[in-house]
Length: 302
Ligand SMILES: Cc1cc2nc3c(=O)[nH]c(=O)nc-3n(C[C@H](O)[C@H](O)[C@H](O)COP(=O)(O)O)c2cc1C
Image 1 (cartoon, rainbow, N blue to C red):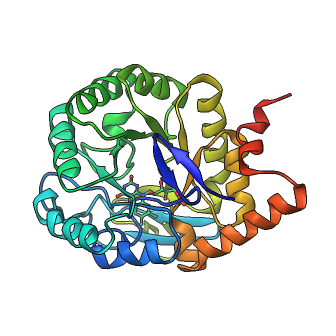
Image 2 (image 1 turned 180 degrees about the horizontal axis):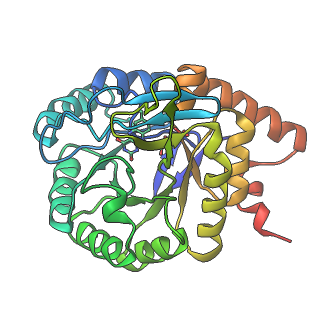
């Protein structure tokens, strides 16, 4: 009932775990699959080990999470072990290897490694807002997005998704660059730049001062981005941002998403979020007497 196909990959539901939550170690990625995620996106992995920003790196707000992690990760060499464990324990599990670098060659080298490790697809993180020299500093310029996408596509045989930032004037221009570069799909969105100040100490809470907002606050932004992209570009989109319940997924799919990423929702609702959302989606479809296919992009129709 909820199965979808994404760039030739069969998923038993549209619910993918988004990059950055419980996905740096094999054990926690396995838990995501066991909890009902149809695919796991890994933590974004770079060429070497990275400590990330100093604490505090997370702040709760009234409408979502603010994070300034700064892309901490074990590096691509050490990540081989986690992928090996994953592949041994769940040979059938769909794993999207997320990577980050500062230029095209670096992305291409990491993509090759992720493919060798048995990733089902690659996600290019061109959108993290809190790591100097990486993420949206690289991915805000359409020409750079095109160059990186093209180079990665040249060296890999598995599907390539490009994860875009909403922190630009036109996300459609970035999406068009992905299409021109030969991307198989787009993931949208990464976090939205935000800030929180501790009024007692007069200081920003995050050590990096400005971080990325996720959770309920950004869902309307994610929906708008998916709607704009799918209106202009003919690529499948993984809709991400503020998914907490079945109706949120339905909304993304109506905006044109082919699948959705769940990130902060795991923090708010626990691992049971995957099974809860599936049940809520089935209830919706049954009530409306519709199939999932019927509602894909339905909000574009007048
Ligand atoms: C703590 C945390 C860490 C994240 N790390 C990454 C990351 O390594 N790579 C990436 O592409 N996105 C990362 N993200 C962004 C999420 O994948 C997602 O795009 C964003 O949080 C919006 O979705 P959500 O509202 O469901 O959390 C991170 C988000 C959070 C909250």
